[in-house]
Image (tube, rainbow, N blue to C red; front, side, top):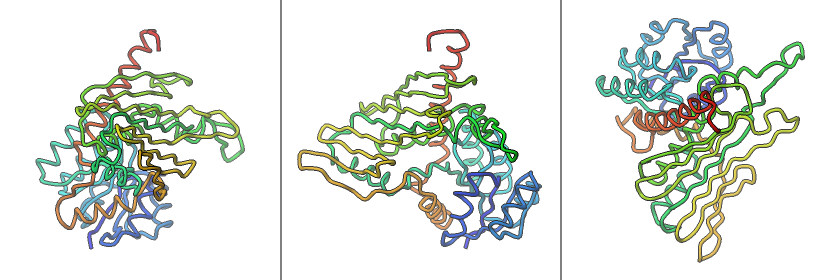
Length: 340
C-alpha cells in the first residue's frame, strides 16, 4: 500500500482526485496540504482525512511515498521542486507548468532525483480513448490523416450568483483566462491525445483566435498541428461558447479521418462509432475523463517503477510548448492591432 499525499484542495481535487484515490487499490490517501486553512479543513472533513497541513515542509516530511499536485497551475513549479527535494514520485495536474521553461526544469529535476514525474492527462485513460489508439495502431481506418478535436463550452459561464444573489464574475473562469486561456488550460488534453493516438510527433503548428472577452488570451481558439507522419490535427477550444446564454450548450467531438474510414466520438450524443467499407461499427460509449484509470496506472507505476501509458513530464512539456507558443503568438498580434 503506497501512502499518497495531495497538494491543493480546490475544485478539481474535490470532484476528481480525492474520491478516486480513496477508491484505488494499492493507494492510501494519507495526508492533505493546502495553504488555506479553511479549504484544507473542509476537504479533511469531507473525505475523512485526519492529517492535514498548511506547511508544505511538514506535509512532505509526513512519511509519504508519492504526491499528487492539484494546486493552481502557477503553483506547480514550486510544489514539484519541494516534492522532488523530499524524494517523492509525483502525479501533477495539467498544465504541468506555466510555460516550456518551467516544464523543462521540472523534467530535469525529476531526472536528476531519479523520481517519476507524470502529467495528469486523464483523457488518455477513457476506454474510448484507449480504443481509438488501438484502432489507429491496427490500421482499422487505414492511415489516419486528419483529426478534428473540438471542445467548445462556457467554462461555467461568465457570471454566477454570489451568496446574496448578486450577479458577479465567475472567478474560476477569470482565473483560467488569466493563466493563459482555453488552449493552455484544457487544449493541452487534445494536443496530448493527438500525439498519443497517432504515435507521431508534432513538427509545426499555426493558430487563430477570437476575443469575445477582455483578456490578453483569446477565449475561442483554433490550433492546426502537422505531424511527422503526414497527419494534420485541428483543435478548436472555447471558454466563450454560450458564456452569457441563459441556457448554454457545448460541443465535445473527436473525428479521426483515415484513408479507409472514419472514427467519430460525440460526448453529448453518446456516440462512438467507426465507418469503413465493411460497414458501421458501434462501440461502447464512455465519458472522455477517467481519473480511475489514471490512478490505477499511477498505483501500478509506484509498484513497478515505470509506466508505458502515464503521460510523462516530457509529454507535459510538449503540450505546454505548443499551447503556450500558439497562444502567446496570438496575444502578441492582438496587442499590435494586427488582424485576428
